[in-house]
Length: 90
Length: 482
Image (cartoon, rainbow over all chains, first blue to last red; front, side, top):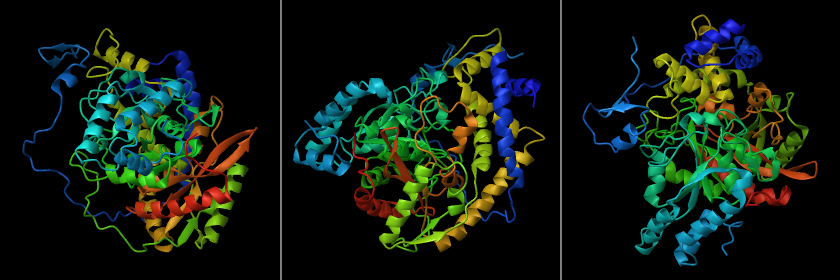
């Protein structure tokens, strides 16, 4: 891995990083990925799962649930006419 | 003065029933200790301002004859559990001002029986860590030695119960986050079977591993709390139906499996090993048969799945709908700034690692392989539990470390050696105090862990209570508050 890989991952995850943070992350990730790479050597025969599948979905009917609309909308960073307002995308 | 040090849930309930003190007086007694000790320990991030109102509801339950065992019992809850109208920040800056808009399933359960929720406790940000050092609000100190960590990620809950800041607590366990801090603080911590306690209202860390569990002073207290919070929930499709047939063969456990290969590998503190060997001897003296079993090191497998699910789950924190918002020039910049400033170091690290292991080209080698290995391990466990009733290990390979001592993240991951296994396969596990070791003149608690097969919490409670009886004689005096 190099700094470019860290920058690419940070861009995919939408996280802004400083140059110093990128360097720290690169060295941490190198050592952590080096360790978890041992998964390659794990034996994995017999991986047919034996699950019994059953339906967990409920019927498509309206059920009254206790949610506080005020508490939800009150936490929007910006709102207009009770809607969440975001900057234009295109 | 109420003797909080020797108080258990049963004792408190009996005293409340007899009218020796009221729920309000009991809550006030805990609030007084919190006022005295919390500043130094940093177990609570917030003590709620409606505690006495809750105590009033509990007192009315006693008056009207509707009280049950947990009525009026003062609880602490981990900061990632939603309690409507109260802040829940998951130890993160990004949720500093987030107010829960509904109650978690476990909170609804506690409210229904009239338990009193005192406040929310410190944790590693988004339950990522093993020491609470990753909290955006400072570390929780170990009540046995304030130079040391309380463990994590439910460190605030464990330290709180250990030092009489609450009589019981809820934590969440993704890879040992209830059990390891319980061991570090000298209390009992239970990780229930995956799905036995609804995750509705628990902020997701690794959804396929997460489960809410009790932290308490005794096994009996942990059992009482577990009985009150478990159950199926329509809001969590992975919660287990109550009528599901679970294998109920042996009523009394007799054979205990010990994975000696894993315990004898490098990195296990000799004092931990010594304590563990004494535990094994004591169990043999009680008439249990000890059997050597094989378990593999699952750290790599665990963390690959953890990184992947964490990076997916934390994508929802966008700085728009709730939590911290940093304004940029456009929408993309809003995201970049809010996430960059809102997430702490370990959280960012795991998001990037998860993004990596899930990216095209690496998916099969990491995540795909880990999922296959997980299925294989589950099958191994079916076989192991056809030969033994319980599995015994130390809870942590090392005693609580000094604050700031572990700067390398990988070294903290490796301390999860014994606990992650139960989360990968979904079986229940309990950590019980197993005595103390002396480290530079300070006595530090250790814990041992029992695992049982799916749905067999009853076996853990049974052996746990037996073990508690012998522990004070054979080892050092355990738990019961500081």
